[in-house]
Every structure is written in structure tokens, then in C-alpha cells.
Image (cartoon, rainbow, N blue to C red; front, side, top):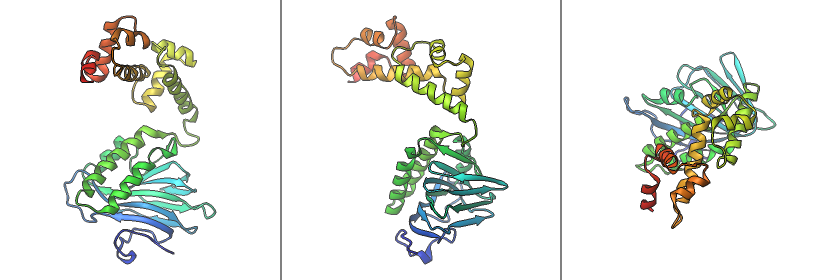
Length: 294
């Protein structure tokens, strides 16, 4: 089996790297980082698993996030077993026993990043990826570009690489929080309803004006709509509506000679003052100030 790693021979790689792979691109930056650092990327990469790939650990020295892009497999945390598929993302760390195995007919391809630091566990919790949990990304392609850039940066091993990788990891975790969806069979109907309502707002935001109108046209109750957004979006549907309107307004303000009154009418505001106040609540500057910036 051929293993492609960074500028270090396979025999010198950390012993937690699996050898049951057909090929891999891996890097490591610092296997013994100093204590007290907020967030440190230790290693990472992408692995194309061999048909016999299976790894079982009682613990792991660092926190880790893995992301499946192809193939299928199984993941066990304690007594719970989860099916792995494209878009699956999971985390583990010190004290978390886990077992990962691949479907021999459709072997896994998965990215991983290992990290530590005083804020590592907090980052995972805040992004709904606490150590020992599994989520699903929708669509699966959402976070792969960030993993690709993380691997490229780690393999370059420049003096700036550790700091860049740490920032990329923060962005990756935030993207996981933004793109996560319920696992199959869990809250599927509620999440589907949320997606339908969000898509409806995104398409019809120019003519939509109130929360009541959104709920009515989406055929859901006002309170239920707000609960869905609180659970999956962490903002109110009305706040999303205003941001979409104001993003449109900001683009229109780049047109020479355009009047704020005209944009207010296009975005559904009958009162230019109310439009200006809504614009400032989103961008912290008035429409007139943004126009002058142009």
C-alpha cells in the first residue's frame, strides 16, 4: 500500500495515523504544542481508506474532526452506532472511545484535522460538534474547500502555516455549525420545513414584508416558524428577511444616480425613513453614508 505524506517518511509519522489506506495526503505541524495556547492545529489530511480499514481507540491525545466525502462506513461512540455517508462530520478527543470502519465495497474517503488548545473543547461545543457527536452537512460540498485549503497550507509548512491553519480551523467549525442538518431519521420533517421556508424567503424577499405574511404563504404557524429558525438558523425569519432586503439595497446603492427612496420602494418600504433605519440596523451605517463610500 502506498502512503503519500508530507516531507516526512511514513516510518516517522505519528503512530495514530492509520496504515489501512490506499493513499493519503497528511501533514503535521507540532505534535507537542505549548500549553496555554488557545487553538493549535497538530495534524490533518485526507485519507482514501482501504477496504479493510478499521480503527478502534479507547481515547485520543488531541481533539479531532473528520468529514466524509465519499463512500460509506460505520462509527461507534460507546454503545451508539452511526452510519457514515458523504456529508457526515464527527468529532472525538481525549477520553472518547470510538471505532471507525469502512464499507469494503465502497471505501471511505475522509478529511481529518487534529487540534488542541484551551479553547478547543469550547469551539466544538459552540459549533454543535461536541466531542463524541455526529452531524450531517447539507449540502455535502459546503466544507470540503476549507479542508482542501487547510491541507494545502499544512503541507506547505511555512512559518505562517500554524497560524493560518488555526484560523482556517475556526472558519471550518463555524461552517459546520452553519451547514449542519439532522441525521437521517431525526427531526427530518422539521428540518425539511425549515429549509422550505428559508428557501421561500430567499426567493420572494423583495415582496415579503412581515412575519405573518411569511408564515401564511409558507402554510405554517408564526410561533412554529420562529421555533424552526431558532433551532436551525439562530436568527429570526424576519431578521433573515431584512438582511436579504438590505443586501439587495446595498448593491443597488452602487448604481450612479439611484435614490434611496427608489430603493425603499423596490424593497417594500413605503416610508424612506423606515427603510433607512432598517438599513442602519443591519450595516451600522445609513444608505447615504454607503453611497458616499462608493
